[in-house]
Structures are given as C-alpha cells and as structure tokens.
Amino acid sequence: MKHYQIAVLPGEGVGLEVVEAALTILQQIAQQFGFTASIDRGLIGEPAKQKYGDYFPEETAQLCEGKDGILFGAVTQGGLLELRKRFDFFANLRPVRPSVYLHDRSPLKPEKLNGVNLLFVRELVSGIYFGASGRGIGERGPHGYHTMLYYDAEIRRVARVALQQAQNRRRHLTIAHKENALPQLPWTRLVQTEAEAFPDVTVEPMLVDTLAMQIVMNPQQFDVILAGNLFGDILSDLGAVLTGSIGTLGSASLNADGFGLYEPIHGTAPDLAGKGIANPMGAIASVELMLRQWGEIEAANCLTQTQEKLLSQGYRTADLMMRSEDRLVNTQEFVDLLIEMMVRD
Ligand code: IPM
Ligand code: MN
Image (cartoon, rainbow, N blue to C red; front, top):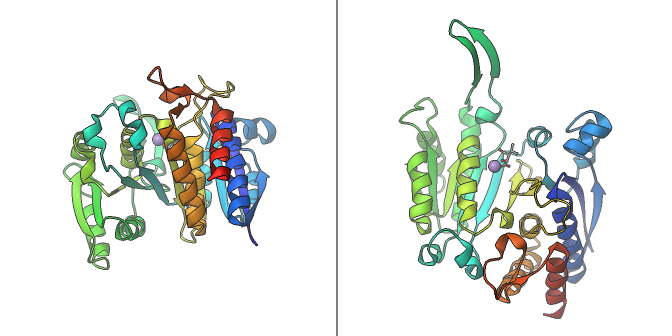
C-alpha cells in the first residue's frame, strides 16, 4: 500500500479549522483509494512566534524536510514568505474554475462564466517580494524602496512550468508583463525563447493592466496566465472572485523536485475564525492539487465530482449564501456531507 507523509502547518485564524476539515477528507479518500497518509503538525506564524520567538522556526523547517507535501492553512504575516523561500517553491499554481452551481454568486454575469477555466502560474520566490529593500533619509526626506529584480533564469524556469501546464490543457499561454514601463524585465522575449520547445502552445504577451481588465470583461479567452510574483498576487485575487468567493480556491507551490506546499488562497479571515463556519473548499481544493501531484488522479477526480454534487444540492457555507432555498451548512456539516456522499457513491 502506498504511504504518504505530510507536514501540516495550520497557522492562524480559519487556517486551523479548514486544515482539520481537509485532513478529515484526506483520510477518508486515502481509505477509499487504497493509500495511507501520516501527519506531522508544526507551528508557523503567530503561534510559532509565541513558542519559538520566530514566525518560521527551524523546528518547523526540519519537520517539512523530506515530506511528500506540506498542507498549510493561513497566517496574517510572517512565516509564509520564509517557508516559500526555504524550499524554493517557485511555481505557484492557482486554478480558477467557477462551479456552474455558483455562477449566480459571481459578480460577473453567468454567460461570461460558462467554460471559464483558468490557471494562474505565479512566480513565488523572487521579484519585488525578495529584491533589495529598505528605508532611508535623502535630500527630500525619508524614503522607502523595494526592488523588482528577476534573474533571466528565474523567469525562464517558471515559464517552462507554465508552458508545460498549457501543453496539458488548452495550449494557450498569456504572459502578464509591463514592458512599456519596465523594459528591463523582458518577460515576453524570455518566455518566447522557452516556448520554442513547446511549438503547440500559442503564447500571447499582454500588458498586466489590460490583462486585469480582460479577466473581468472576458475571462473565457484565457487558459494559462503566467505572471511575476506581485502581478500574480493581484491578478489571482481578481480571478478568484469569479468563483463567487475567495474561500473556494486552493493552490500548489512547487519546487524543481516536485515537492509542494498546498494552501488555500484565502487568508486568516479573523471575522470568521473560531466560529466553525469557514468555507473548507479552498483547503479541500489544495488537498486535491496535492493528490494530483502524487499521481492519485482518481482520488482527486472523486473529490472534485463529489463536491460539485454537494453544491448542486444547494449546500453552502455562509460566505456563499444568497438565496432563501440555499441550505446553510457550517464547516463540519460540509465535511460530513461530503464524506457521506463519497462513501455512498
Ligand atoms: C498570497 C498572500 C501572500 C502573498 C501574503 C500573505 C504575503 O496574499 O499568498 O497571495 O502576497 O503572497
Ligand atoms: Mn494574495
């Protein structure tokens, strides 16, 4: 029997609740699809700071070492960037596929959402998040700066991941760039060179501001969208609202060895935390991505399909409630229903 070992870092806020929910489901899936998963829990963010005086302590880093994946909840600040950097998780995948049962929760018109299936590939360990930064005092007073620096090689390696993904999907890659103002970061040229090895993928450079507008006006045109760290952060939140709630999206962040960090893209949601009402779909989507990365494709498909079925029957967590016929469920009820449906079908 196949055995996987995962590190679990719930973090703070709703992170704790949604990660537990996702783990319950993972254990059920494992049983059903004939594998086992063992879990080591570690601290990150505020709880780690309190215990070890560090948002991302060495103890936690060690715990993650050599595992088959890291399941992560949420932190408010501190710890996450260090974790991404430590394991060189440079390729952040954020799929956006609005469920047809949630089209009416989206700010976009339903006809704009039919068939929308995007994948953001965001560079995650370089760019302005990690460039030289500081504060100083100059002639005109105090100033601050962050530098958007990319090695060509960093752009090329994430481009290859995006091209590979596009090849296995609808073979279209859009590059988010801002070369009219930032010509020293030639994303278009670098990605196009890498694309020579993927002749069946069409590559379309698009200015990031235009791209933001197009995601809202006509999201159906996109397949894979490649972006640097900051642009990818902003665009993927924009993409997430198409689904009706940012609570539904998961992500995978992979390094060159295929080792990955799996996290919902919503944050700690302090207004919901501790109430047991958070939407576990983002954490479940992250588990699904982990299963795909392991090659447990059938298990992943089962999870997606069962969740669609649950949504089709009108079950909604509070963030997705809209109509009187919606059936409000809390986190635990959502999990129980999902498991019940998985066992039955
Ligand atoms: C995300 C988050 C983080 C980021 C924050 C918490 C630093 O917004 O994962 O998208 O900007 O990368
Ligand atoms: Mn973000």
